[in-house]
Image 1: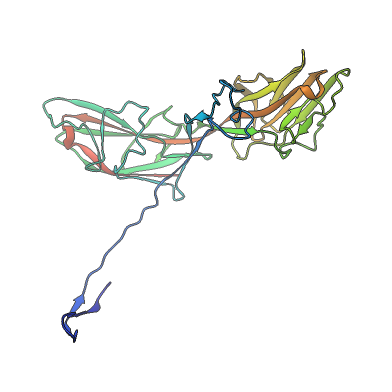
Image 2 (image 1 turned 90 degrees about the horizontal axis):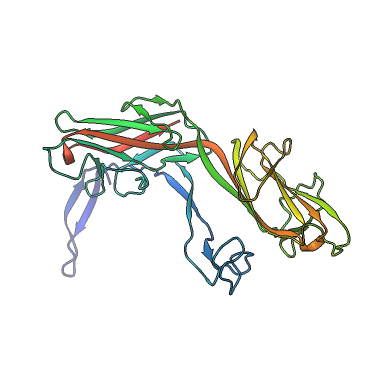
Amino acid sequence: MSKDTASIRDQLGNDPDTTFVLNADYYEDIGIEEDTTVIKTRDLGNSFVLGDATNGILGTAIGSGGKQVVLGFDDRDITVKRVINPNKIFNEHFRDTDFLDTSATNTAYWDITNYRWVMSSSTDKRRTYNTVGTSSSIFYNQENVTKAKLSCDETKYGGDVIRYYLSANGGTNWEEVSRNIEHSFTNIDAEIIEYFYSLFTNADNRDDSATNTAHWDTTNHRLVMSSSTDKRATYNTIATSKKIVANSKNVTKATLNTDETKYGNDQILYYLSADGGTNWVEVTSGVEHTFSNLGTDLRYKVVFIGSGANETYISDIKIDYVTNSSDLKVRVIFIGSGANSTYIENLKVVYL
């Protein structure tokens, strides 16, 4: 309300006449910040999921894939997938510890009572402090951060020193920055882990432009050597996927895992390609592979050799893969004797 006239009426008695008029002459400024969004996923862990090939096995102490599935229990892992802000601005007012990296050494005090990052919670100014505070990821996404500018409000006791650092690759390399001055990063790449998972409930990932002689069995949810039951024949069949990566960053590493069933001495061979099938490399299930030929088009190929026919198959496939991108973090070091009288407030990082 600004320069409005409000009539105040007397509500007593039968005649609520206007007794006086109040002229409201004030303004109110409201600031709105768009906070950083953290996107997380939670895996199945040992949860019981009806109909799942691994987590839906009742009465089994250890299910396929090594998971406990007796009615299940909640031990699921949470993985951070993205930390983003559409304006590419991170604001921290220290009202919670959501962006405090609890896995790092933090000797500085993240004070959510007084809303500040403090040299120490102590009041003792007779000693010398050298404390450090580290944030978790304030930006984590499939794009590179090349520049950033850090600003904050400083309060320092005596000759205390506050030093600021940023890392664009998840803390592998820290670069000292000056407050309120744009910094260009020397080290910009960080590793981001993604995954692809299929239970073969459909053939959406089958590359129909390639040779596929193995059987994509969407009825029994498996990839099979052959739809035949004839074990007198010898088979050498192949299944090839489409592109399973949906980003523009190079895939540098990948780990393939499957749940396989084999008849007799049948063999199942696995191959990965990071460049759309131009170069295939044989991999071992459960073992991380580092690609020599990088690319943005990750695919898998499965080769079945033997006579097991429809009794040799895999019932799921999971591929964890690594791409290079940015993982922006903040570190602050306090040096001096100010204890709880030296601190920063209203931390802001603008990144490009």
